[in-house]
Length: 177
Image (cartoon, rainbow, N blue to C red; front, side, top):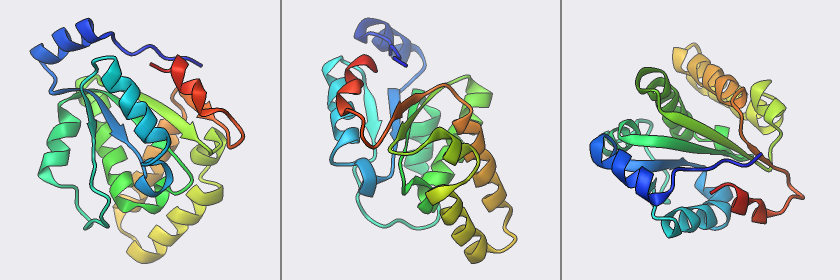
């Protein structure tokens, strides 16, 4: 499936009115920072699309920083790169939950990329997604945020997206933007 992001002229005029960023990238750094996400980021910049990418590669505290929340709220489009270790990060799950909240309240666009994962594994919380959520449940016990994370993963997996299989070509990115 190919997506067309706004060209630089329409993205710029739209962002000048309402948005600080045309695109916000959500990804698990250990899986995609130096490969798929780096290529996608460069491709978006080359098209003149103002893109937010968190460049910090540090282990983070539990909460999302106010600056990151602001970037989410002020982004027009979200590209969620769901990779094998995405759900192991509480940071990614909190980010995803906030993104889906914004999608509902501000009508922002969410485009999932299933990078080396099967969309049905995300939707049904199987494989690495199920394992990660089981660990979070153990760690956080009855904290309602674990249930919100599960719901967020199920929701994002129901959206139309791009599926890049393990044996697939990353050159499929050319049809994405």
